[in-house]
Length: 432
Image (cartoon, rainbow, N blue to C red; front, top):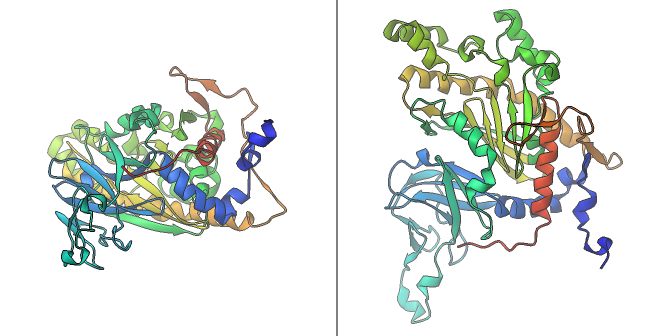
């Protein structure tokens, strides 16, 4: 059998230096990837802090599959298909809540926290033909890492820790900005809808080049109003000449590290409502040194950590990318609080929802939507991903990770390699 006979049709569309426009615009590609990509790897669903009590639940999408994430009586997190085994209706239609029994509103079949079918109205109608033990909700394999809950439908997928690989260390660094190593996701979210393909957002997630151009009006305004050094002013210069860098963390996970440009977080943070008042209260109560130590964790983080395929850690917030259609995506920004700090610190962290999601993300959404418009041109076939590909600027860091300058399109290439692996895999996806 020749190589031509064994080649997959996608092989010609994902190359080292470019990808084909159809991968963003073809509905059939989208229908395949929401099944294969979001089912065949570890996909982020929820944070354990959203389920503080026994029988708490949230409902989320796994690709396009509706699922329930709940905490059982033993304190373990369980993920279930949100689909009644009778006629296929969603069983749970609330975004969050607490219940021991999930009751389908259509015909009142009842399921417990582990998905087992426990009651059927007028059961006598089935005589002896109802096999309840075979009619539970499908259960999905899930694992957590430091509170972050992921799920997969690939029974052969290695453990979550292996999927995270070096990304786990970066996630640890982000979580451990908390004095107690605790992060909480309990404060609601901001949802932004974008008329573009979801992969355009991932292409941008570790793009160190665009900020100085796409966000220039915001950064210039802050420079003029508050002076140099405030809020990512370093992106207005030659970003490759500075201390930022990008990394391929393996398995499609990528990283943009800006921390080398941020000697102190609080003085370089953009002003926010209540900032001066909170700072004055903390200085008076704790003294200058202790107050400033806590304030360092109130803003920023200088990290863009991207965990394939849908979890982005940006600053102090969590962004989840949810594909809706080939040209429609929802981005959900979750604010986070941390343990071991005064209440004022977490109040400042909540106010960050009023910052970049409102003033910076609209710039990005405009780019994503205009990319989608441009990609509709069939005669212009390719999207280029080769910045720094053939240069001498990439190297291996002390952990053996491929590392490049801030404007390197290394993260884009890493994403597409993993996407191609999953899209061309023949593994069968199943519930437990």
